[in-house]
Length: 205
Image (cartoon, rainbow, N blue to C red; front, side, top):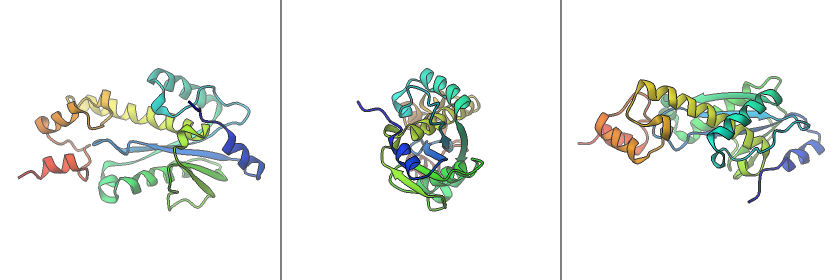
């Protein structure tokens, strides 16, 4: 199994770019909660060992890596709300979260590595979309870890306000328990009404 590397960043450094940020989002698939993005600029001389796609790491490992990153990297986070997801659509909302995370880095990066196959339209900084980037670039992997940890904690907090949906374990994804709770307990203000399983419950005749 190949691990993400610093090769794409090194190539960009050789072309004169200095502040290269990896950008990733978490939370496009859930039925509830915001979509969260992070932008991370790694110190080339001080990259924590073990950075990888956040989905391939245990929660304990992700938290340890975030602690290391907070001491060694520049980090910014942002989100797009459920209302924005429903108003815009999930792709545009996830791009909005990415744009906000990038805007929160100061000074600004001079190049962006974006996870996925599209560069958000609101970004004016030179950028490259990297398909499956969290498995190829350590900068994007770092952003995926930061974004996932933050979003998981948001969902744990929301689970305390709305027990029964299992958000502390499923992070709002459409697990069997979550779908059954939607049918039995109904729709909360944190559910994405534009998503079919939620929409169908609200408008079942």
